[in-house]
Length: 138
Image (tube, rainbow, N blue to C red):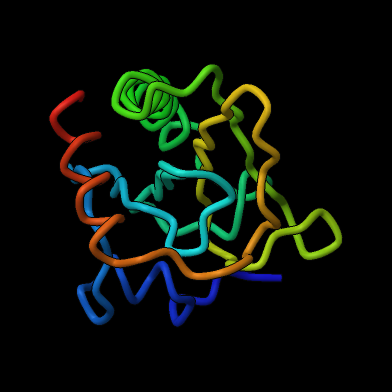
């Protein structure tokens, strides 16, 4: 299948839909996941159009992976998480629900189970505060 720019992340990147933005540069947007699996669940969305990792331009991947690492460290620091889970899904059978390449940085807390992917919506005030804390840690 080909990339469809009408996906929700494409709309967010174009400013058509609001998001709790943590960081943005010419290559990617970092934002809070509004349906988090844990407190501080953050998304890195490359601006280069691709459906997922399977059709992404290797040059775009080369620029975004250092940002993924930087965000993972910032999320761990800002949230006090015990660990970080990094997730990236490719096609619906693998769990992909938004067909624009993105990376999940999911804080893991000792003794706390992760929520379901796409579970309940988080409180907007909490997401805004977390976005500020993570941005400050970047």
